Length: 295
Image 1: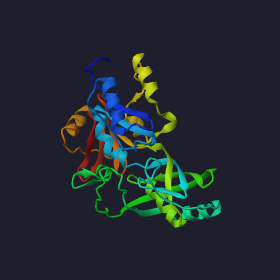
Image 2: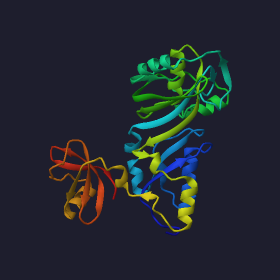
Image 3: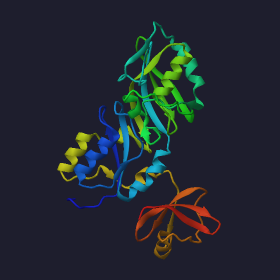
Image 4: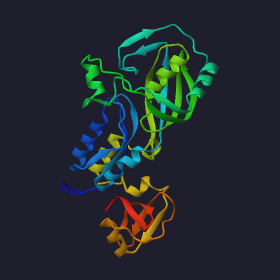
C-alpha cells in the first residue's frame, strides 16, 4: 500500500526500552504514511513489552482494549529506593538487608485482590491540566493524589536473580502501577525498594509471544508484507457474535435499534453478510443496538 492508503486493524508491537509509547505511534505514522493511529495503554519509557496499537476505525476499540487485564514481569530491588520508584531516578534511601524468600512469598499474598495505590509523582496523571511527571521534573511539589483502586489477580514470585533482587509476575487491572506495588511490598518488609526492570507480556488481549519488534515491522513493510496488521477480530475472539441481514446492518450503522435476538447478555460482535464485522453491540428491551461502530 502506498501513501494515502487507509488502514484498519491492530498491531501487536514490542515497545523497546528508552522509547515512549507515543514515540512508537510516531514511528508507525511515518512508516505507514497514515495519521489515524493510537495506542491502547501507555507503557513507561524505560519499560519494554506489548503495546497494542490500533489503526483507522479500529481506534474506536482503544477504550475497550485498555480495560482488559494486563500482565508484567518485574524485578524487585530491595535495599534501595529512588524518587521515580524505578532504576532511572535518584537514590533517596539505602538500607542493608537480606530478604528471606519465604517471608517475601508471604508478603506477596497480602497484595492479591483489591488494593489502593497512590499514583507516583512521576506519572502521566494530570494535575490542573499538567502531567504529574512534568511538574516533578521541574522540582515542583504537587499535591498528593488520592488513592486509587486497583486489582491484583495473580502475584507470583518467579525467582531470585541476585542478592535482594527477585523477579515477580503480576496479572492486574488497568491503572495498576507496578512501581508503586513494589514500593508497597518493600514497605511491608520494612525496607526501601524500587523496580529495576519491567516487561509487559500481555495488554489489550495481545501476548508478547505473538508480538513484532520495530525492526521486524520495518523489514516486512519494505518487502510489501503488511501481515503485521491484524483484523480487529483478532483481539475480540473471546466475544460471542450474531450475523444480521444487510438491511438490518444498515439500520444498525445508522444508530437504530433492531429486533434481533442477542447471542448473550453484555457485549457481542455483529457481522453482516455483505460487510463482515460492523461493530460491537449490546442488548436492550427493543433488541440490539451498536455500541461501537467499526464500519
